[in-house]
Amino acid sequence: MQEGMVIRTTGSWYRVLADSGCFDCRLRGNYRLRGSKQTNPVAVGDRVLFALQDDGTGIIHDVQDRRNYIVRRATKLSKQTHVIAANIDLLCIVATLGLPRTSTGFIDRLLVTAEAYHIPAAIIFNKSDLLADSGLQAMQHELTSLYRSVGYPVLEVSALTGSGLDGVAALIAGRTVLFSGHSGVGKSALLNALCPSLDLRVGDLSDWSLKGRHTTTFAEIHPITPPPPYHTQTTFLIDTPGIKEFGMVGFTVQEISLFFPEMRALLPDCHFANCTHRHEPRCAVKAALDEGRISAGRYRNYLAILDDIEETAGQYPA
Ligand code: GDP
Ligand code: ZN
Image 1 (cartoon, protein in one colour):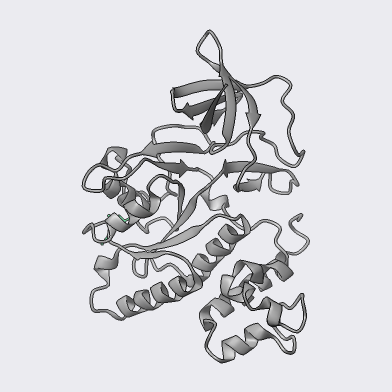
Image 2: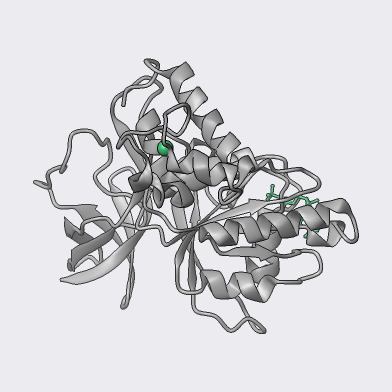
């Protein structure tokens, strides 16, 4: 029996990357789905145990427990979910302050989703070359210290000039990584700069995915090794056509502050255990906000998320 990582799924075939090579595998006939809530038993990123057969293909006998995974609803109003990818080491949120301007609301939503899914997250501010001496540069520095103070790694880079890219290479080395962010922020340009052999189309207005290489609607993992001067280990890049679906599914108002680390830390000091930090008396989060220990911008984005949840309540099954 060998162990490997699923890097591609097509119908009933799974491509598994193991120490001894890459193998096309099928699932053992009597394999049972653990929960009926998921439509696919195996997703990219899953660690599996498989046995090679005489014809060179493999049979997957077991799927190891997932450290984390991201899902989308199988269909719009379905209770079933489809696992997009599993065992993600890092979500890299690519943002830009100019051309286009990424809102902190968008960044905070992605961070909340990452927290909820137990996926470590980092922020990469790209196109820093466009900000020289402008007010936007000061704003980028401010956001960088804000998010670092909350606990997230933040890099200020330029795919164009190469500035800061060694930091990105070090951040993603040896890890299974998902890049996310609005189109136009330079995800393709960043990845090309790190790994020219990827040869991604830059300037394409669609969502990022390794287009033209495959036509599947399933996610895929591409092992990439940045060449010198980066000298890093292989990175496993998650390429998902459904990246827009990486959003919040079925969250409740009560739990959102658990996904803001600086609020989560204060929750035990709130008078009410289920405090939503809006109008409740003796709220430690509001007190911290008044004293400037919590960012007013993050708090505003927090309230906006609560409003959204209340507006869509009932539309989405939890
Ligand atoms: P994606 O949609 O996120 O993959 O963005 P692309 O990689 O396609 O880049 C969108 C546009 O931004 C292209 O015209 C790139 O040339 C440009 N771009 C990407 N990175 C940078 C950068 O660091 N600085 C500048 N000035 N332009 C960039
Ligand atoms: Zn509170």
